[in-house]
Image 1 (tube, rainbow, N blue to C red):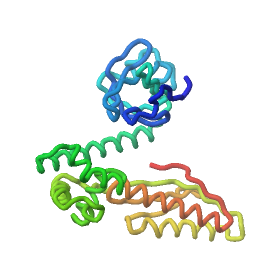
Image 2: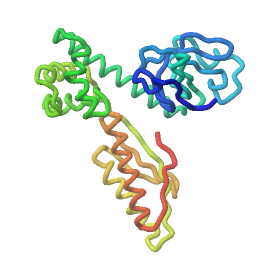
Image 3: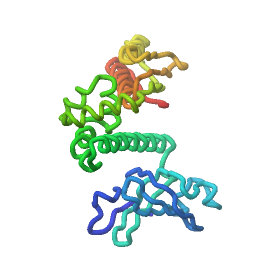
Length: 269
């Protein structure tokens, strides 16, 4: 099946884009595929053909999906004339599915807190989003991240990005009560080799560079069986943890290359 977007309004904001990962809820299963409503796109209907359910042979679709199940699909085609969005499940990796679901859950929590703020100020969610939601989303990866930082550093975090005082105060109060900043553990396995004059010293420099970045986050770097090395850390919030690990990996690869060696990422978890 070709991956294309069709129709004069194929770029409509309430439609997903080709290649995008989307959250959907399975509504109906037939012998030739599954229908689902797009949670992030006003419940628009999408279809997953049986050939896109799994990488293995699918004899019974119900062995793979069920009604009311939340799924993560990759958009293959958008056809506005037919009012149809075609998805694939088999083209979504487990890691991408996990990350998309996590992203969606965070968005839902952030939205719920903004709804509570709107209720407290006796106004609509739309007004709340215009007054505060847009600013939080434009300055952070999502609204929840803004509220997590506010809980840790104070209401000034929200005021500094332009959130009006009355909204900032209410959102901060809600964050203190409802936001839980969890410590997240992440690790990456990298492969480092150095056949230049630097040799093992080049590898040592690369590992020390990574250690310097993760150490403040209770991180460590250790041998996983040379030439493989593992970088492990803990941080408050998934976004912070990902960012720190990315910097540590990038710095170790930069240093090993500078020393005339080679490096690559073997795995992340």
